[in-house]
Length: 222
Image (cartoon, rainbow, N blue to C red):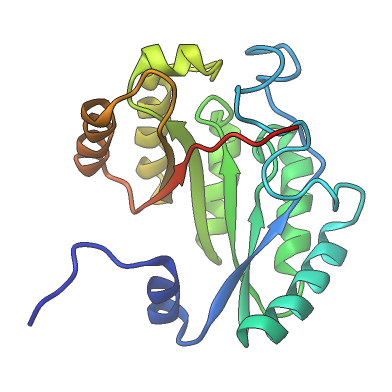
């Protein structure tokens, strides 16, 4: 019997939870070391000033965002369970106790069955990973690392603010705690041809990671 080399997210979540599961995008009001000066200023060249995906919910509580998202996704997709997706900016870039409060608030909302945490590989110091590992023993937890490209020259060009080695170190330390990882990459970055993108694909295929999210670069008029 033919078995695909990979599964889409909806299928994987249905197999794990036995029903339709949807991610609810959240804005926790955090920032990024590539904006506050620790790693750089201005952010990556593709980043919206309000962060990825949300922004409009920045001043709402986590609970309010989740309840609103649940109502919409239940109606649109008939979803029964949900993942709290901390998406905007770097969602491990805060004091550990603040992070704990944010994550535990999300898990206290009915029908939230896990966390997906979007962050950068230069924002996972040991106490943060310890917290994630603790929560990962109690609930589904996926760490989503932005890499974008396996080429340092590209990371420098897009003002990423960290190196490939920093990413590889974060993956090693995260997997050592048994946490699952999703890696984000962008196809079509400036200066990259098909060969360069395939090199990123091959590198990811050799890593101990559990998921890949592929973005296509597009430019919007502002």
